Image (cartoon, rainbow, N blue to C red; front, top):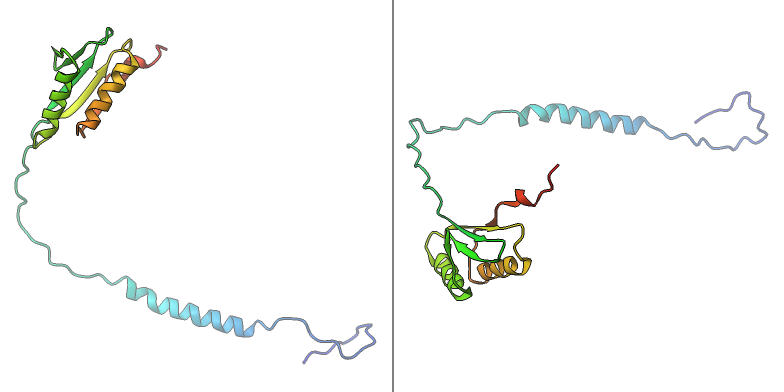
Length: 146
């Protein structure tokens, strides 16, 4: 119990509104001791028997097969430098490339002056016919000279 000494209060029944922090400090000390005890248990190392010996020699990765489809300024399409006469021939080549067991990388190289419609049609045909390794190269020509 608390006692008010020297206060100007006229009533003797005022309660003490301070919180008793002793039980909280006791709980915190117990938690701190438990933490200190359990920390060394987490730092124990586990011995693992690793295999000894030389790793097998690395296999040289084969060079990826790359097919380049170029679209010139006049919207002519070439496949690895050979002109493609029409859309049916281009679609046949895409189908053949997609059917190979190791699908070649397809690099689409549009000219800066090529029609967007032709480039979009070539990309759509490649995707529709199952070509999954597809990329557009030569984008440096589209950057403005600085």
